[in-house]
Image (cartoon, rainbow, N blue to C red):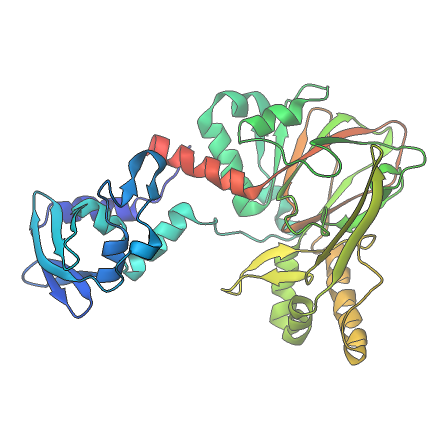
Length: 398
C-alpha cells in the first residue's frame, strides 16, 4: 500500500484556512497568521528572487530555473508586498514583479518541521539495521507478477528494500531475462564491465572467483567502481544439487556495534583510505578499475552511505603511513570477524524462481560451496533510479 508522509500536506491545508498577513523584517519576507498567537514563516529575499516563478525566470515544462546567473540581482529587495487570493505579490527594486502561490511557499518553508518533512518524503529512507536473530522477521517476500502489474506492490517492494536492505521476489519464470523485466518496472539495468546481465555459474578458466563452485567470501560487488551498483538482483534458475546457500550480513548493524563498543576502531575503518582494484578480461575486453575509499564511508551528516568490502579486490598497495598499518589490520580483523559471526551472518537457500534483491551499498553477501549444476542470472539497479521511481509513485497517488 502506498504510504506518504502527510504532515506537510496537513500543514498546508490547515494554513490555507487561516488569514495571512505579509511584512518584511531584516532580509526576510514574513508571513504570519493567528493574531492571538502569531506564527511566522520567514523567506529570505535572495531566495525569493532566485525562485521567481514568472516565465522570464522559470520554465514550467522542464521544471527549471532559466534566469541567467550573470544577470541575477543578488541584492534586490522588495519595494512593495501584498497578499491576496492566496498569492503573495512582490515588486522588486530591480523593477521585476513576482507572484508566489501561498501553498507553494508553505511547502518550502525553512522551519525545522518543513525541512524534516521534505527530507522524509523526498530524501533517502530511514534504514532499519538487523542481526541474524531478526532476519526471519524482517525478510519480506513479494510476487513477481504482482510487481509487474501493480504499482502498490512495486512501491512496497522498493520501500522495504530501501529500509531493510533485502527482500525476496518469488514466482519468476525459470529462464533468463526475468531480472530485466523486474528492472524495467523501476527504470533500467545498470551496465557494468560484466554487461547488463551476467550468468553466475561454474566456468572453466574464469578470471572471476564468483564463477567457481567453491565458497565465495562475504563481499560487496564492484567496490573498485566510484559509482558502484546500488542493488543486486540474483535470480535462481537452476538450484545446485548440494550446497550453494547464500550468505548475508548487514554492515549497518556491524558498524553500529563496533562504534558503540570500540569507537577508536570505528574511526580507523571510516578514516583509512583503502585501494580497491580489479584487473580482468570480459568478453574479449580488458579492464583495470581502481577506486579509493574506506571500508565505512560516511556522508557529511555522519550517516553511513556506503560499505566497501571484498577480500579479492582489496589491492596490495596500502597507501597509508607505516605506523598506521598494524592498527588498520586490527580494525579489519574485528570488522570481518563480526561479519562472519553467527550474531550477524545468515544463510538463505534460494529456490528456483526466487530473486534475491539487496542493497549492495550496505550488505555483504557470499555463497557456500556447491556441487552440480547451478545457474543464477544477476543484474544491478541504481539507487538514483529506485528513489526516482518512488517519488513518481508518491506524486501519482497522493
